[in-house]
Amino acid sequence: MPNTDAISEFLDKLGASLADGSFVRLALPGEPKILARLVELKGAPHLSVTFRHATNDVTKNFPAAEAVGWVKQQLADKRGGARLGTTARDWQLVVPARGKPRLIAHAPETTAAPARAHDLAKATLLGDSARDWLDGLGVSRPAMADKRRQIERYLEILSHLISECGWENPSRLKTAPTEPGSGTDGSSVSPIPSGAVETPRPTGIVGGVGCPSPPRHANDTTIFTLADMGCGKGYLTFGAWHLLRRVHGWPVRVIGVEARPELVATTNALAKRIGADGLEFVAGTIETAMLPRLDALIALHACDTATDDAIRRGVACGAKLIVVAPCCHKEVRPQLAKPEPLAPALAHGIMAERMAEWTTDGLRALYLEWAGYRAKLFEFVDSEHTPKNLMLAAVRVGEAFADDAARERIAKFREFFGIKQHALDTLGERGN
Figure 1 (cartoon, rainbow, N blue to C red):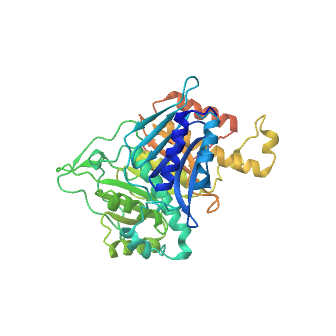
Figure 2 (cartoon, one colour; figure 1 turned 30 degrees about the horizontal axis):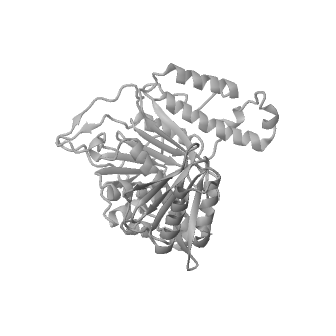
Figure 3 (cartoon, rainbow, N blue to C red; figure 1 turned 60 degrees about the vertical axis):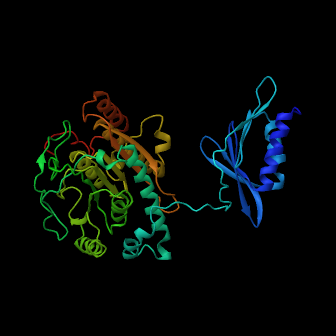
């Protein structure tokens, strides 16, 4: 490394900031990008360094006494410079390919030193305001720690999807109604409010059971409506309601649909006990339950074609957001062909099983794209907690069933894998 005044001065300022506690952050560009903060480990200061690769991050900790020498070596590898943040000044070291390095002073981004704890406290969506329903569902018990982490992760994802839909501001929401149908006692729910007027059903959306057109209230109040299909004990239903009502403060109607009446009674009793306005549970199946027009529909771990039922209901009810987490995949497996050059690999049962899952969920994404949605598949919890950790999220971005190219992609996909029948075959047929 060339012995230049600018580099020496930068290293001196780094050493001084580590010594006097004014250090805020350090960044070195390149591949991988390097970010560093100062932490306390076993009572001694360390530089916690994160190496940001394209697909993953790696973190290593160096004693603060070794930090200046380590950074000097990084600069010797011609990383292109560095930026040091302190509470007094920020310093940008520029090391050009040609010419002399130079040091540029900037106003500090912050004048307060950050916390030095190694494990920074993580912001959580499940704070004290969630304690009543978490306690009521038994999730606060130590034995349920994994379940609580799953709920937290689910709410983080749902929060990101809400932003993706452009729903940060409740005034931008589409109105959803209250409509007669199955209610908290298994009979009926609240009628459409007085003064509501009917608005036209969006074009290109397939009809469905119990998915009427949305009324707009005379006072222009917007109610965000979400249905959780096959909600079971209601962990995620309460979670979604908590995020929308208590965290965002929106007027909401969150409906949990569950086929087992005893669970419906239990969850409704808890919702009533904690005063969960806008939350209700109804008895019914994914396919037949009466639903209002929806802003969002979720169905996590719906077995086999029940996931497809949920997708159809979401499309039929005009949901802008559809989120499903498929469970078992039985329909496609016996139909799955073994096309070349995949045949030798698919001769193994475990490979055919995994290919059937991959094919089923990939085809669901294609159908949703044809229905006017932008779809994405991703893992939403660690596989150590559950092997069924794939989530399919879809945001409506265009007109339904208008893209012939999307329909052709479905046909080619099915032909390649020999799929003659699929639960989403009726998607796009009006009156279903």
